[in-house]
Image (cartoon, rainbow, N blue to C red; front, side, top):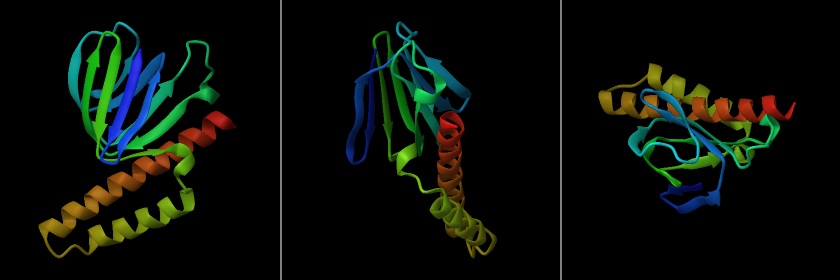
Length: 140
């Protein structure tokens, strides 16, 4: 099936894949060829891609997403998100430092706007760390 991942910067992935795992408000869903039609929200989390049926777990590709919209048809999956960061682009030490700063901002928020922004930053960096850990675990 065709998988297209589109960010605000353009098309990140447009390839044939065997399986895509997408984080939704109801939990992660695994999408295979001939999946039932579905439109859903994607929540901040990890998208996992298996390109071929025979690919082992160490060949899985992981991306951290910010949330968005998912459209599933029998032969295609389209995910529209603000940002998607490939696991190879994530530097764990930088993400951990950014998470620590976001947690501190959350503690010291002076109003609801600052608090909401801090929560978004915490979510973003927690997801990035999760994706980096998935990469490390599957490549060990």
